Length: 312
Image: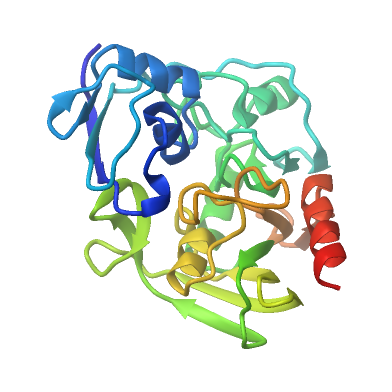
């Protein structure tokens, strides 16, 4: 297997010790299937401390330096697939969907189908071409284990208009999340640049080195003892993993976050408890402001119910 981009990271957090190599890499490579990670390990595309490691069962140790060689992705066109889609709004120019947790937005290495793009191609027929054949129609994205509202463009005119609004930070994007620990202030703003973590290229981090401006506004919705806080977070900018990175930066990582939070989770959280509940933008064709809301998914609400039962 040809070696393409190299990702290097070091095991520094004590909670990562003892974790299996395939599980560890799967947590970091969120949009890559675990079976593909196992294939990479078996085929000699992973090194630990400078030596090839072909066992998926290798247990991580503190101080380990792990290198992952990810083969270059082939730009194969995404194929239409008849998959479940929750359409919130649709016209001749765009579609707004309520993405389920666990669904990847677009094809990625080791995850060539079963994505939102595959489903949209089947449902819509045609999407904008600006972002290429494996990301058609995708103006912005949300993480695999983040649920909620996402817009996609059916043509290049609409795509360009929505992209300009994203660049101008004029699109309304609000999320709900559960963080660890008690956030004392009622509201706040994190204004800190985000870029690739210089110590771990599989993650993002607050960093001046190559970091881009990132601003997140948050407010407390409810506190649960001194242990957890239910918040709303509004994006002024839209960097990769922005809310997850910013909340971890102020020592309030999201509950269940496998990448930026503690390894141990609670209340049945599988993946970060984060939901894109509000999306607003100006329709590029009509000039009309449109706003959509998504109720909390059952899993999120169940966690809130458990928190209320424990701390009320």
